[in-house]
Length: 250
Image (cartoon, rainbow, N blue to C red; front, side, top):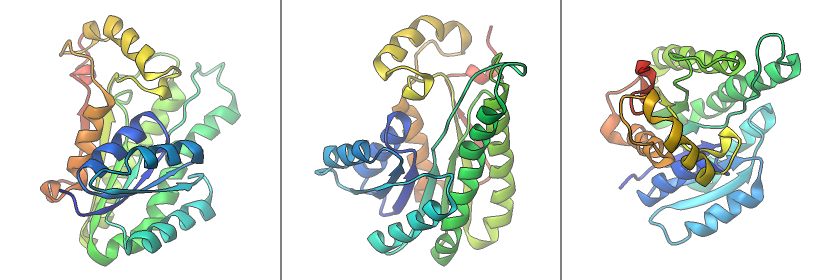
């Protein structure tokens, strides 16, 4: 069981919801933050009988005041914070000549600045008793697809910030790691999970070392491990959970 208080951003759907379910089913108290309150509430209702607990809060991670309010509300609900999972993300695809400046900046605002704001907001509380920050990166960094350079750039920044913050925060007993998903079904990829799973079953096996198609639960399991005390000596790690996609198998 994981007796910890954890904030999960971008928790209203797909990967964030899988992470929440995994943590709550292990007994964690999870503060779910996202922009879609109705979906957060539905997830909390779904997990009402689980060993842990869910508290939802409508949050925009790109706003300084929302990040601060999120951290304060989590402390008020649970008495402290043990971990933060920076899962909120956004993508617009397009080549260098097609991608609008506004979309490029919005990706950085959500994927990088949002991570910075949320982490900065919780660090004072994590310093009180040590803790863990888990950032959701992507295997697009070691294996960049075409026409997604803006998103790749944001996730490269996530990797760099993860390692730098692990060094900065280590003396305060705060671990910082990044989980980099491969090709897994996700609403983030522009379709529902069921349709995405069918699509990936056709296209993913030739591109990765393992033929099996991954799932959001695979990513959630690694996040849960990194939050737990079993990962107490792991920090600054960029962990690919991808069936070998980042290996570049043709």
